[in-house]
Image (cartoon, rainbow over all chains, first blue to last red; front, side, top):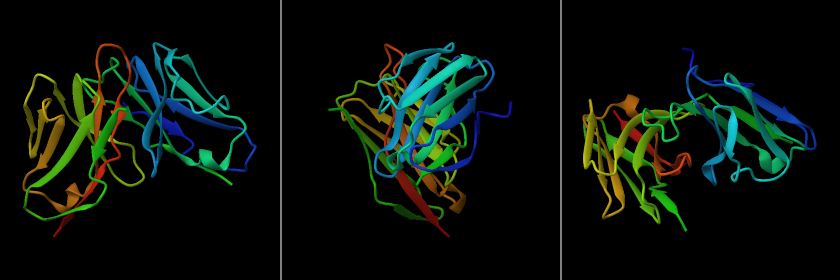
Length: 115
Length: 113
């Protein structure tokens, strides 16, 4: 397996623009997580899915953020409109089971810069 | 409020020595505690998991302890090498429901040759 695949690796956008981040989890994993990492706040859980169904989105900072998982092999995180404070590295992770007893597998992340 | 604390200052260790990193937590009753390694520009990589009823876990040069009374986990790397230089994150899972992992901010470890 190629691991968790995220795209793009880097995204630079202007304030007010829509940004879409993409993730392909590991085949067979039934949980998918979106995290955001900043120096100040570390890794923060935004939302997670089980079998493509959103379970907990309490970490999503504002209504400008939305996430979907239309099928078991694809998820998106959308920010509309984007703001400079959204600049961060966004990680997608997948696991077998919610507690990740074999650990979470993370993608390489998308570094988002909003100018 | 719930907190996971890791030493925010970089830890400098001489090659060949044992590196010990600390993870303290408050207002958690974790069922599992995990350790991850993160290199610059990469996502965290899973290293070890320890359950609340386990006191110690080993994997090659790595050892993790878990003291639920002290609310602390220690992560040891023996015979450290420059290639072990990275940021190490601890993460807690409360169990019960599916609430995802909560991560500490990590400790940057530097192994000097």
